[in-house]
Length: 67
Image (cartoon, rainbow, N blue to C red; front, side, top):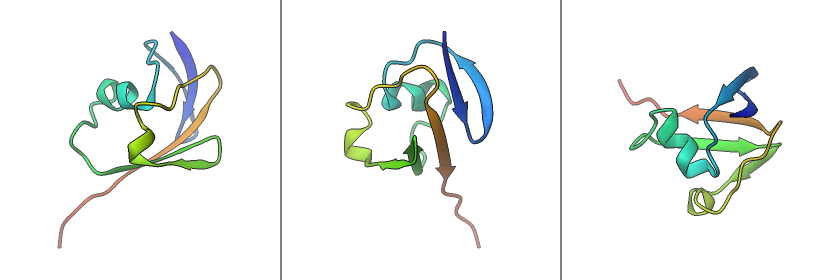
């Protein structure tokens, strides 16, 4: 388990090693998401390369369409 803060809420998640795996774990696959890790935007191209560590703070925004 890994302790993270996601959108201001402390969470214990399975040991996701990178942001791409976290997206799968949070069931956000296929959605348009923007992620900030410890105050820095993570480009989508870096999701596989951005490792998560204990006490990371993430802000995740999911785009919602409609009209």
